[in-house]
Length: 231
Ligand SMILES: [Zn+2]
Image (cartoon, rainbow, N blue to C red; front, side, top):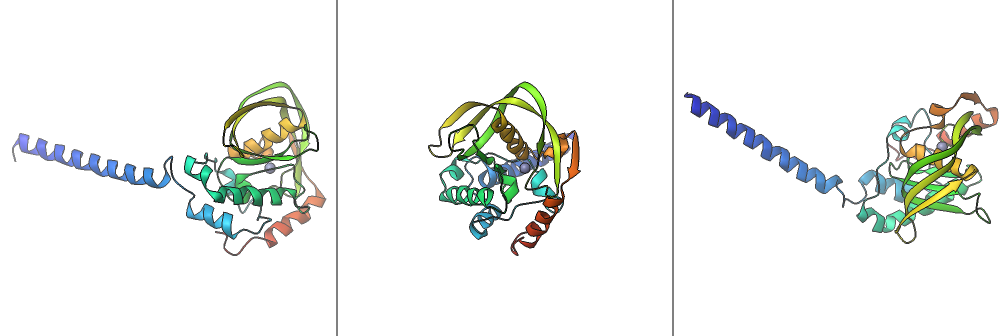
């Protein structure tokens, strides 16, 4: 074989590989890209869950709890399934068995940027839902305070948190982008819930973690309630 033939053969192989990679990219983009709908797993969690959803816990659900969450795509934001997810997460965090002040997507098996936060800084302390939320900045004094987590039953810890946060998010009613400053204990709830969306738990940041006996029983309740269809 002459040098030029070998070269053109190599060029052909490189070109063929480039086309194959481009095809794989386009196919993946169509499946997981900006306009993708909910995955089959997300559909299962949203439709098959009871109104009070199974709450993921360490250690058996560490993969979900440790995976950073993605934004909802434009198609997902318009999907009625998102309304179902919001309603079920609200029922879950407000259920007397949970008694939470906040909950994040990964805690119900959904690695998307959704949280519910009880606005203790507002009249009547309403729960509000935030989509595609991010903390833009943290500011003010840092102080240690006690925290627990529905996903870390049996434990509590002392965690350093900033006094105030600036957040940006998509309004769950109008789907408009919003920015807001929050201070006080509600800002700590935002920090805790937004950490969940990065795969971070309060025990990662705590100065100290200790066992809380009354919470040990909750762990058994969660395990018992794990649905049969859960992967
Ligand atoms: Zn938590």
